[in-house]
Image: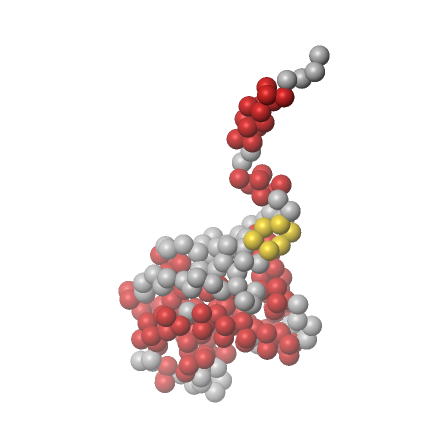
Length: 198
Ligand SMILES: [Zn+2]
């Protein structure tokens, strides 16, 4: 006796309804990062507590950080790497994401607009936190997908790496231009006291 095809349809729908979203991810061969739009072969793993990325993009960022920590020549531009990735993956509005976006954008403003040296950007970030009472949600740019962590990771020499990180940081900084004035107000009062030559 041949099976009645019509009777199979409800069973198929029932099975699909039981599949969890995480299992659907595993069934897909590739996944797109929600912010930088980098498409990678699906490979489940951890992500950051509040920055928002695909696990694959987060893993590549981890590889990039390891490359910088293992070689001082790559580490020189580390501050820009951290600022760029955080601003490119800002997440959803919360106390922590508001603080993150304001602080990292102020750091890039200090570097590109005020000429603060790479070595002083950590100090800038620490001092900007004092203005957290004035922080507000900075609506992220609609598209920040032109340069991704993978472009930087593919560089073969420290010189290429530094150039690529700088381009990435500049692109991300320009993408957030709507909020430059806001972050400028935090640092223009104290940046002249910093030694910008170090
Ligand atoms: Zn990403």
